[in-house]
Image (cartoon, rainbow, N blue to C red; front, top):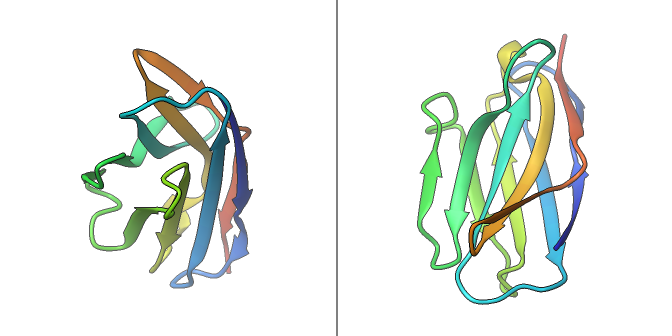
Amino acid sequence: VQLQASGGGLVQPGGSLSLSCVASGSIFGANVMGWYRQTPGNQREMVATIVSNGAANYAPSAMGRFAISRGRGKNTVYLQMNSLTLEDTAVYYCNFQQRGNSYWGQGTQVTVSS
């Protein structure tokens, strides 16, 4: 499975950004797509995940500000990020999980700065 992420960039505090990720390759049945983020010296942390049936899960820091969704074709995942703060600055990674396997996309930088 290959993942191609896009979006990210520089935004001021309080602003919004959106990320998208397309999965391609050997995709079968139920799967989970999501977004994780990592800052220098820290472990990668889950931001939000969404199952192929639409069930979503959010990290407490993302609850109420971020929204994860899947495209009609189910192999695309979006992350709408609102009310961004300096603490949201990180490299964001798309993730795809199915049948016990986990795949990662290339990271995309999100920088929140005034």
